Length: 229
Image (tube, one colour):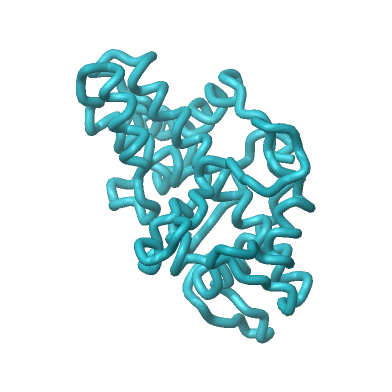
């Protein structure tokens, strides 16, 4: 099951991000596509635009906690996430399609999934517009075919069954011929994208509803000054 994102856990994420290395506060453009649909929905409710600096803070926190598509990280908040995700599995699924020195494949997600679901997992890959139904947006953490009650997250086995069996009537194929370790890597990467998407929405909501327009979600300059002293 996916870990529950409580407000207390969100505050812990922000506290840790503020003291993280400056790599997480980079001004480089994030490689994951920002959830602009959710941003616009919050702005419509707010009847005002969210400060772009706050949205950049959101990207910085996400990089600090989740890394990038080429360099993913297991977010270190609570034992649930650490138990759910393995760094080695994420590395096998992430990045460009290649293999390591031992011949182990890497880039499994881009090889098998990104052309439909997109690198961000938003269901907007290059072939998505030609598909009916559209590919699943993993960032929402909502899955149709599962054993859990409505409104609850799928189990690990639910995700495995989707990969193994595919979904008839859609473009989702079966991956039952993949070795077990590759299947497990893809399952964990989908979970990673879903958790990241939930945190992203929570951070955007925080900017829109809890902060004044000139407030910062995380003040990277202040955090760096504190570390230097």
